[in-house]
Image (cartoon, rainbow, N blue to C red; front, side, top):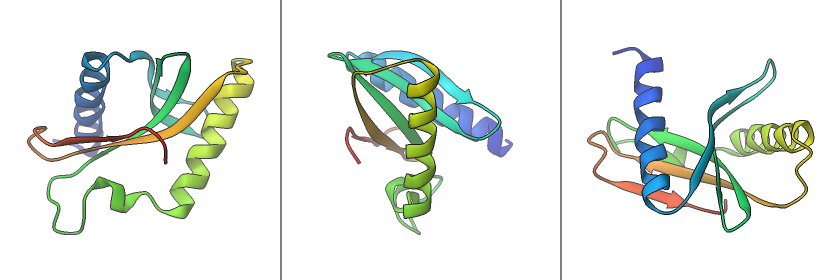
Length: 112
């Protein structure tokens, strides 16, 4: 399985998780030349920009361990780009979902 396939699997699991928990997934794998956002979801008039971290093993930490200050900066840039491009002026959050290899352990942080 390629890393793209693995990433897509994680995003699909996260998308189902969000939908099952009352979020509406607006976009999945949103990309531009300069940035990307794994999932964009909405609930209670708040837009969530969601980074999905799918890990085969937690030997080196869970998925959240891989969200570095640089990654947060990239996430902010991508969210601001999406906000500008879509003329959105409501509330929003940077969020993350960590998923284990089996998809059985899913943890969602609504606000990073």
